[in-house]
Figure 1 (cartoon, rainbow over the protein chains, first blue to last red):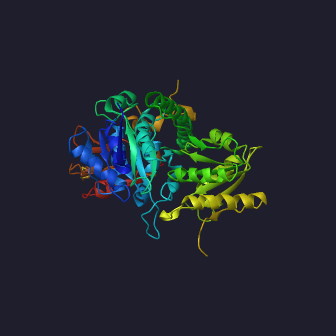
Figure 2: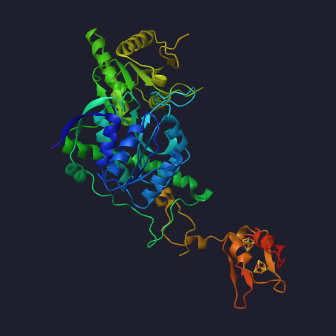
Length: 391
Length: 96
Ligand code: SF4
Ligand code: SF4
């Protein structure tokens, strides 16, 4: 039977990994991911699971280490945050290009500078084009569920790609939540032992990570792109299986009161829960507002997003990272260009919020939506704005 | 049928560009790169094997008499063997 426990989400993430029958993990601790690293190493050291925990000297090494182990057919896990993820950057596109299943938790934190350990999405956004499957979790329950799902998705031989599961640092990782844990037997049934497509083994020599001459480089990039796009099918299949076994439904684009909404707010990650309360307040005032929550960032769920937003008059996209000198935040850039060819499409407004741990309480969401609605009525849509910035 | 040098279409690319045929690099003749080739003067050679050890292509081998020669299909003409041979038994000469 599934049991419900009150647990800090970072610890719960490690507990979820502990249920997944991993062979090895290499995790370098960094705030606010450290509790994942510490607790997972405890789980291994206490003999609760039969796995190797490799204590590495850096994130460049942790990601390299798990990739090498994945190439031998092992089930592997790593986790990081902020500067750690930036330090992995060189290796990230190699992992996906080599089609190595790796599951990585990322406790989202602002990148330097100025030095800042608090939450936003500026760490994951520069990794956008690394060819990974990228998820955002909204709650502790989703962190646990999606950690387990991620192994199944990554290791599917129709996918064979690394997965990054984002969870907001502190706001999510350090919050104690009531979480339902599936029991070991159920997880074993949902997630059987990995059956690798190919492995490095001295008895059956093959080569991985080879040179690609100009004659094949473009074809190899195209085939990798197709693999990532194609992974959507497996992601949806795995979510269906999850719902069947555990009763919780996962969708690439979640909505809240979006059906008849004229104004839609779009969030990613833990802010969705606060935004729901703001939507409730505005609905009480008679405003037809709704919420769209993006769970799947790569491969981007174009059809699903378009279907949800096409009837709205105004779409307010929130970004928690800056694309300096660009046309807006990264999420906004993606969505605006996705809608360019659509006949039916809302005006799109971009608000950059919650940078470097700046709180965005309910009243800010209310104000943000009301202000955007006013300028939307007048048809004035600025490129992008830093919400609540002083000066 | 002539064996293809590389996959024709993106659909033919192995996942992750994995190569399932061991030692398939043998089919790639780095010898076509060279502008110079090593020529041995066996009268100076002391059969120390240093050229054999240093050749980055691994294309130098020892003959029955214990002297060394490069397989010119793979010798890329880098000149490392000639540089390392301290008795000066190897000379790089222009190709063609
Ligand atoms: S390095 Fe020079 S001396 Fe030594 S084996 Fe090679 S050719 Fe002969
Ligand atoms: S020139 Fe370079 S590649 Fe050719 S035999 Fe000498 S060391 Fe080897």
